[in-house]
Amino acid sequence: MDRLRQRADFLAVANGARVSRPAFVLQSRSRDDTGPIRVGFTVTRKNGTATERNRIRRRLRELVKRLDPVSMQPHHDYVLVGRRSALSRDFAAMLDDLRQAFAQSQRPAPRGRRPSQPETKPAPTGRQPD
Image 1: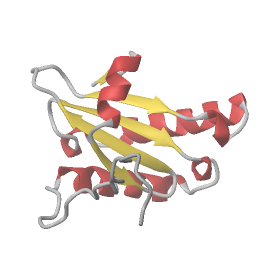
Image 2: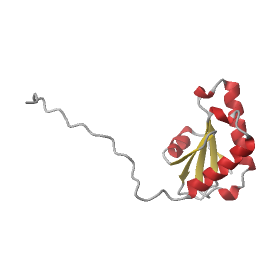
Image 3: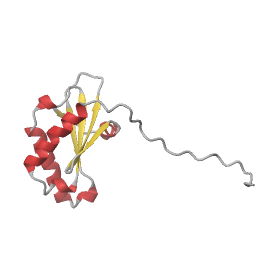
Image 4: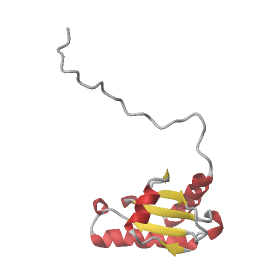
């Protein structure tokens, strides 16, 4: 298992599937190559000071180390986006959340649901309404 390090890889995964949990968001994306599973970690500045963000990142890395690689799909990239509650959430609960998130990310999306279409406004014609 390798680490994601380049910004372009993180952005590509951000366009993939997403599973939310209380302490993190799991993003995943299938790759076309035969490389190993890659995992990246990110924690935004709104989650606290640098010390707190580093603690969140360390907890997420430890979760992935303790997880069976079998639960991850081969030829996939994953990104764990840390949330502030990762600081106080029980580690065993976070590990269960991660297992469930990986299982949910492997399931196909439910049929019949389409992404919502943004409302389009008619183009102005330059005429005054009657």
